Image (cartoon, rainbow, N blue to C red; front, side, top):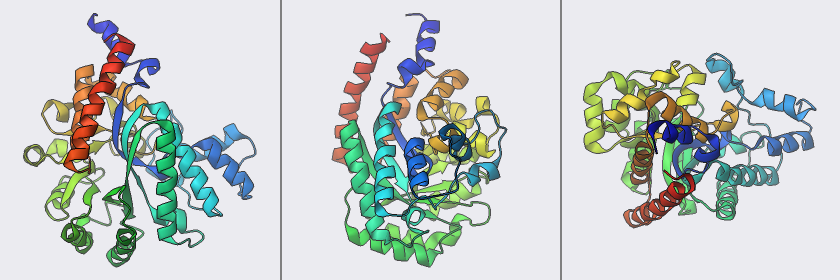
Length: 357
């Protein structure tokens, strides 16, 4: 098969939605099924448009809109849920629909605070409810799932984080494999949360991923990996300007969870065609392709794969390698990780047969 034909397959949604994908950076709060959210909003009497198509325009970033960080943030709301049933329904339906994106394995992150804040729900109950619903959805849809608990640096103090972390730790939920630090990088640098991540490091139950270097320079990435013990970095686009950091990431296998569309919409990297992912991958830095908040972005993970092929001339071999990097960077134990790697090889073989590649 000639090169043009191969590229036409790798840039076709018909085929690429079937490509088996590993995702390490997706927020449940940004991947809600719009139809489910609409039904919950109407049931709970929220002030939303009566027309479903108009409703979607209020919860999603316009596809053709110029980057606008404040507009992007305005799409996140915490007042959807009036009951535990609402939380369970949105979690199940949103996770189930991920099968349409070709998900093979995902480490889905969510914040118990997001679901609990409006009605002061018990954070432990909400954590268990979301994970039970997500587990059932993933099983029904036929893919693997684990969870990261997100803590928001501009909404929780380190002391509040430690308190919630201890409650969640005491639940003993085996599907929780990691801790995520998200939120405002500019005004809440990672060193403010040293005590929280020292607790995580001391307990040795979970590994850490930290949003860093998305809208700040590479100094925050250095702090995240050397002070907060982060094994992965959310976004990390500013690493492209720091060759020394790139060598450190390679040497210590610290993986960058990168998100092309999200970085464009928030304005953190406005030139999609020159997103750092391509150059970093070519330089041997461990990077992965992720969607971040696909429902809010009015996109999906498949779109980001097509962009990666279009902009960076990634081949099928590149995409497979990126996903193997992601599998090796999962927060699973070694034996579980190897089992998934073996299963993934079979999934790729089926994709090759499906496409003729």
